[in-house]
Amino acid sequence: MPLIALFGIPILVIAVGLFLLSISIIDIKLKEIPKILTSAVILVLLMVNMQNIAFGIIAAMFGLLLLEIGKIGGVADIKALAILGLMVSNIFQLFIFLIIVSLVGMFYEIIMKYIFKKKHKEDLAYIPIYFITFILMNVIQFTFAWY
Image (tube, rainbow, N blue to C red; front, side, top):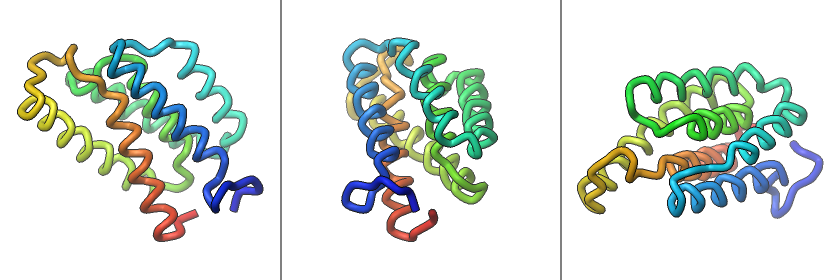
């Protein structure tokens, strides 16, 4: 259990959640994320969660695969996935994370294209997918006490 928590939720989880919420809003409004923001968070998480580096790399590689097949927008999305991967602490959580991000992404794309009539990939903000995934992962984690 982490040393510093607020209402039983680790401060790091709250900070990453607020960061993902912030860049989700930026992505929705501007469709571009300042590179320094995501890079800085990755560096901080590497210092704090060095034991999770393999999960961060796997999540980033998953993001690269999604970029190659045209399911995400760019490097900021890969970095956001790496951030989420660095927050995963075991292989079971990583597996669940990859499933959840895939399902949320599919539903998000369907909703955006068919309900909000977003026709082009450029019209979609993908970072909210990762924020929703992060929230779902933490609800599951704290409900079932994975940590």
